Image 1 (cartoon, one colour):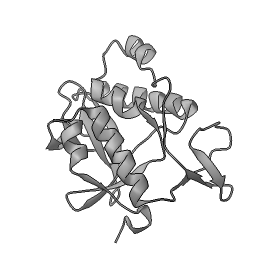
Image 2 (tube, one colour):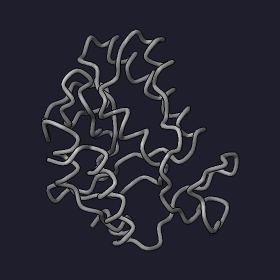
Image 3 (cartoon, one colour):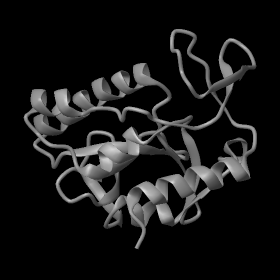
Image 4 (tube, helix red, strand yellow):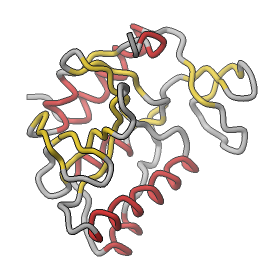
Length: 183
């Protein structure tokens, strides 16, 4: 069985092979290492770059008095990349990625809000890692205690388990041209 780092590396490699030119939102305030040719004020070509120093969850873990599942730390702390358009079991999904250290800080702030919402609603704590393309209120999430990947509606508990681990789920995902994401 492959470890999560290898699975992520293979997914990034196959994504680049399938889509030799990739575009993402351009944020001029970020000094993102993934940015290539700027297309216009909103769009830039991107190439994945391995994070030299993985995104740190340490301060957030202390503040929330929790420990994040290792798969969550790995998926957001391995690569700087644009979001990945994928297909899982015939359904288009977007795997969220971190584009830069600044984007990592924004992600951590969003995760804080998500965890606090889960606590307020007295629901099991999950961390969103992706979105359903067909409905952006549908989140792909990781159960923070078990590492299971599942689906949940915003503000609701996970209602469907997709895989027992992030590795198992990602192995079943295929790169998809984002321009054909909704057919």
